[in-house]
Image 1 (tube, rainbow, N blue to C red):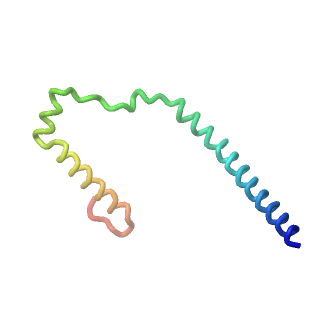
Image 2 (spheres, rainbow, N blue to C red; image 1 turned 45 degrees about the horizontal axis):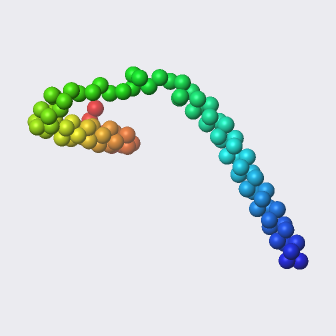
Length: 91
């Protein structure tokens, strides 16, 4: 009796794992279309321009990176608060 129950258990486990493999294969085929679409898009225009070395030390000495970080975090907090319903802290 134990051998029969073990056989049924192994069969069901194998069937469930094969369904999972079919699901993963189907999902991979769906995502491969999106992957090929994204791979076909050129990324040359997405690169940020490089700041020359002569200017980087001036920006670092004046604290420009800290100022940009403070402004960016303030804007992020503002947009996050405006995304919450019933919390409108301004326009």
